[in-house]
Image (cartoon, rainbow, N blue to C red; front, top):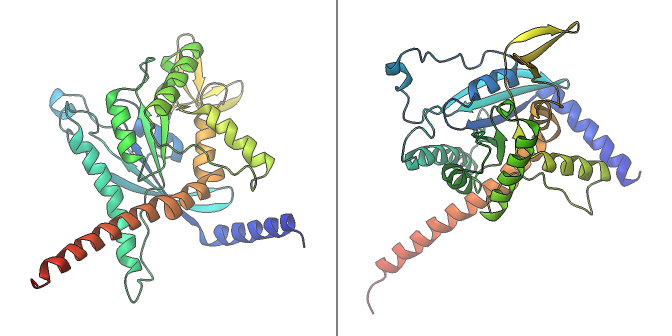
Length: 312
């Protein structure tokens, strides 16, 4: 049996097991208020995960000024596989003049999930019901200014990129005409390169991966940052029901890849690259955190031992 056939059989076995057992996946959404994160999540999950907030009065609109990390789990099925999808919203991010506390709250939450895994691995007897709540992907919603990344965007993605797979997303991309959007995408990626911001850049191996995988990843790289539009409104267009945003000049279809990148992003997240995102979280990001933490604790223990040594 050659390697290609063996790999195909292995992939089919894994798929059958996943279809029967199901998968769990966690996505965090971060961005300033008013960028449509809740609408995006509801569109992604095709259900009312996050009800619209009541901001009819100034008093209510000003309530959430601290980051309220809110996880919600939705049971779904993608390509015949059961998926337990946890979405983490972060209302209040970016709403203050100084957002250092927001950064710290989100980073602490992500690292807390790593600490829980580390503690579980250190137990003599493991808990069979232990649940892994590590964040596998962080969608960072960029304000569609048409200019470049803001200082807030740069600082946040640099700080969090070492701990989680950051995927940059342009929110409400239908506020720009195609030429503006193309130019904005280019400037954002230039900023990411210039400031050395670590993002999930669809990694592949030229020697080990097949041509189809390499081509697909290169196509997804070219889409970054993903331009998205969210809408829970459905209308009948030419005899078919579509999710869209309506304007005097026409409609923007959420699931039409010629109108925005939503369908590509959704498929990538929940199907084609779900395993890649989980593997990088486990094998790279978590292992790096684990090594750093154990090294720090080891250094502290050595310092304590030195202090306890009696003087000669």
